[in-house]
Length: 374
Image 1 (tube, rainbow, N blue to C red):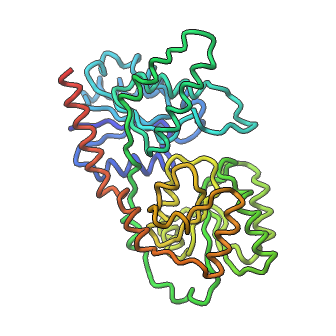
Image 2: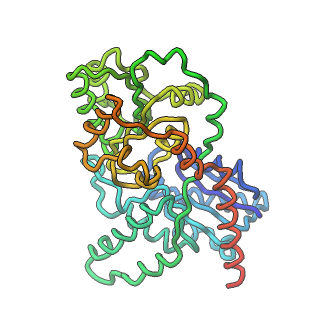
Image 3: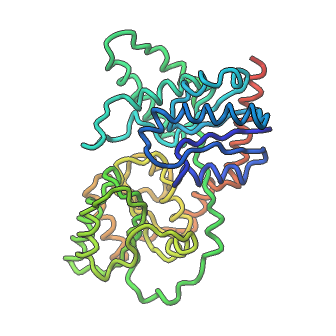
């Protein structure tokens, strides 16, 4: 089967996901992408460019896919309208990595319902909709009626149930086994203080201030630890990060994005704990990779995080409120809590592409069969 995977924002986790499925699928997966920049313009105008590129692909190379798999960051309804002569008989699946319905808006992003509405009409235009986690699916349908009721009339609330009927969870596939080659015995680190890892984008919804406040408190109390602050810096002047580097001093063993995958993988295997303070996270891919590499997770008891770790360790790995991070981490650093990292690794391995690619393949095969029958 020939699958065309359309990724309007080809970078970061989106790129890793697209290339991962292309590599591990039993089907022929062709990528049609745009660079990962100007996300608002991708949502508004990306469909026009992608439609042109797709029509050229069909007309000039005579490429005709059996199925189109599109990521969420563009207007699928516009794409389908502009390619109707070639996509009328092709089923299209829409995959939500994130959705603007529940994405927190800061002062720089006060755009109301504009991009959430794009997500909505894209879902309407799709033959089937997939969400990367059950949490994400539930949050989307909890908030969709609220958005529609915001408008003056003709709210089309009946479409909520129609969309729900063609929506399901298809977990994020992760190439976890690629980390295996970089595992090594950390004999030189035996006498080192515990290494904490924070591996998130440097954005407000990841709540870095919540992390730094806890680290400052632990430092003032004389608690020994090291910290690796990684992740992509998407802001021009992240003052709180620069302040943290100065204040934490020699405790900081890594500051900023790690360009080399090999170096990043080694860092994950070296770290003892992976911490999240996020207020928004639709799956938790970076945390999942760290867990696979033996990190004990210290995560908020919200978003998708309760699904990332087995329920038996929720009490040791999840904190209920923001203030709970200090108390849970303090207990771990004092040696009061023990967590079976092998159990954690086994749990997170269910998201490896060796497991997930066959599930993707089967889901898309079923969609094509259903589409052909109709």
